[in-house]
Image 1 (cartoon, helix red, strand yellow):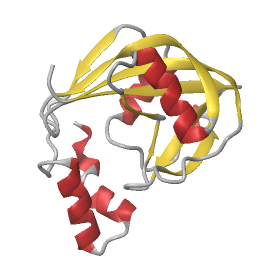
Image 2: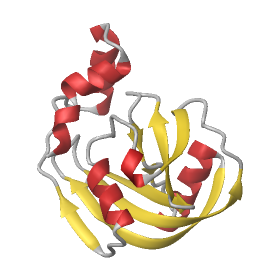
Image 3: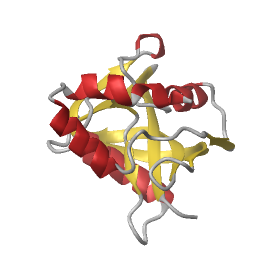
Image 4: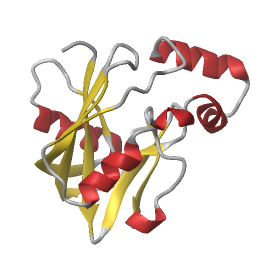
Length: 169
């Protein structure tokens, strides 16, 4: 496999879903990030939630694998569900603007591309999925997207909505 291997985590508590607002484009998504070398997928999932939110979780199930093979050389995300076990909500000061618990019918907007499908799959209790998208980024790399964002003069969310939000396909 080439590209990036990452995890997302659907954490539910009292009927609510945990989401983070990313710093880079000020969009909402499930907590997650890249798997470190030598790290198991479940350990990466638990670590990413802890780093981004300050909350402790234990991964429980694999909802599925979500691939975008044509996006920046390939992005492959394993989506876990997890149980909340402790900690205090504390956003990562570098990567996260905000954290929140949301009821499924009142999710914040905009959501990061691809997140709605993952959230729906997790909330429906689906397991063992394999989903692929042919979406292509309008930018050759994440670094180019960040450079163009910074040069555009647009607010981060506005840049995302103008250039990347249509990449849901």
